Length: 259
Image (cartoon, rainbow, N blue to C red; front, side):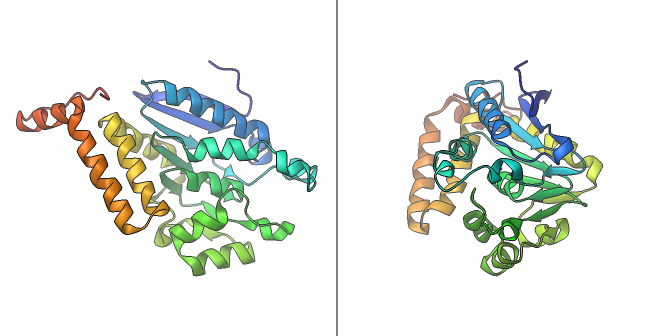
């Protein structure tokens, strides 16, 4: 086990890793150390073929209630330019394997941005999503002004960013911010179930599927369709494609190896 203080890493299911934010006394506020530890854990997971999907969660009170305000307050105009947060967020954003955020309680500011960096969000009935940076005389600084309108639309994103007021889990579901809402005590298990289902699929196809879906945010339709077609064709050269089709025709369960 690696020497983490701000997160706890475990492997509760086959091919599934769980990262739990571990600063409950401050509602899992995202200080630089915590983000650096997530970056480190993701780097290790990227190199580990046994890890095919990840779940990130907090605790019952909070997924993460935002950035560490004491740490932010110590920055000035010059020091913020060399802040390591940018590299940490970049590592989270570019992680190639699927990530599911299991959210209970407060999911605010950087916490909401961390959840939006995941590929799927499962929320408890008590979850609250928001970007309250405006209350500090700031704006979201880890993707909130860009990801939120792409997910929930401009009008709701504007209301959330400009007022700083959160939305509840049901509103987040209706807006497309989360995939499912379940009872709070079931959130992590439901996220692990989905991760385990994904982990049974072809690892190479899963990574390429994730990359293809993300292209929808980065490119126009024509370019996105071209990317999809080329990716589809590449997968025909893989052992997993041959195994998948053979298993289907043979009426058996496939054994994917990520090749």
